[in-house]
Length: 146
Image 1 (cartoon, rainbow, N blue to C red):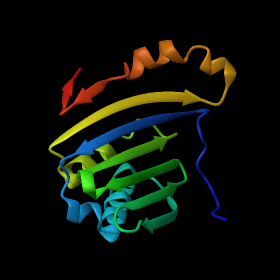
Image 2 (image 1 turned 90 degrees about the vertical axis):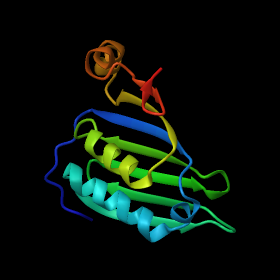
Image 3 (image 1 turned 120 degrees about the vertical axis):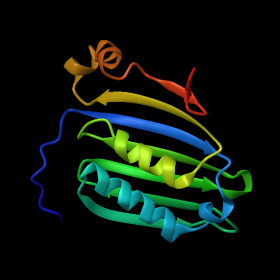
Image 4 (image 1 turned 90 degrees about the horizontal axis):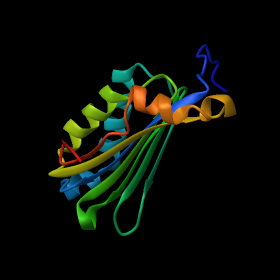
């Protein structure tokens, strides 16, 4: 058990992205993908508490980095040159981590959605207004707002 000095907020920022046109060699390289998630975590100042990597047969990788502030995950589909990225953070919007992962994976095309989810009912009731004021649920395709 890791001793925690982090005080979690009662909500989490969620970043979701599908990336297309990614090099299939990267999508099968579990060590490099783990390194990318670890570096992204470090850029945001997250505290890494665990990591998990699974190499699918015949191809594809699932990588998870568990952080004190929540998690980062990548699942790959080399046969489609694609990956799905999920980042969840109670420490604030993981913008720098997302930008680093995007730069590292070099997709030809990507989409993106962000959200905020609360575990407290009183906050959840006001979440839509909060979302509109903070992130406005941006949706992107190839870096352009839809």
